[in-house]
Length: 277
Image (cartoon, rainbow, N blue to C red; front, side):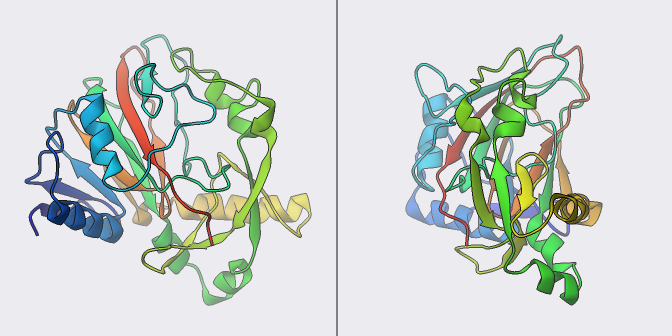
C-alpha cells in the first residue's frame, strides 16, 4: 500500500497516514484508501490542511457529492455543510446514534468530516459497526430480521420543531416533505462487500412493515440498543485538521455534546449512495 493503516479498535476504525489529502491523489492511493475503507468502515486522517475545494476534490474520488435536503450548504459550495456548535447552544447537531439520511430513497454512501475548530476537551465522535452487530445476533433472531422492511422518515428530526431544527447555529429548513416515509430492508447487504448489516437507527427509523406499533417498537428498541453495544464501537478524539470518513452503509455514529460553553466547528461533505437491498 502507498498509505499506512493502523486499526484503532478490534471492530471498527483505522488511522491512515502517509497521505496529504490537500493534494490531488493518484489512482493507486485512492484504491488503497477505498480498500481500507471497506475493511475498517471508518478512516481517520490527522494533521490535514483542507480548504473546502480540497475537501470536495477528495470526496469526488469516491463518487458524486450530495446536498442535504434540510440543511443549507455554504453559499460558495452547496455540498459543504458547516456544522457549528456555539458556546451558548443547548443542543448539538448529530447528537444521538444515527445513520445519515436513511430517510432518502438512496441514502448517502458516506460522509467526510473535517475539524476546523474544536474544544480543548470533549466533542468526540463514536462509531458502531453494524456488520458486527448483525453477526452477534443469534441464528434465530437473524432469521426473524432477514426479509423485514423498516420505515424511515426525516420527520422526527426535520419537521417543524424536530430535534435537528432546534440548533441555533445550524441553517436548517423544516419542510412538510420531512414527514415523507421511505422503506428499506431492516438488514442491508453491502453493495461492495456482500456483508449483511443492521439498517435501523433511532433518529430516522419509525416502524416495521407488517407489525402493530407496539410489536414494532419493542423489536426496534432492542435493535437500537444492541446495534451500539460497546464491543461494536470505537471513539475518535478530534484535533484541528483531523478528518473522519465513514461508510454510511455499515456504521452508525454519535457526536457527543460534552463541551458546553465552548465552540466547535466542523465541515462536512457526503458522497451519494444507492438504494439499499
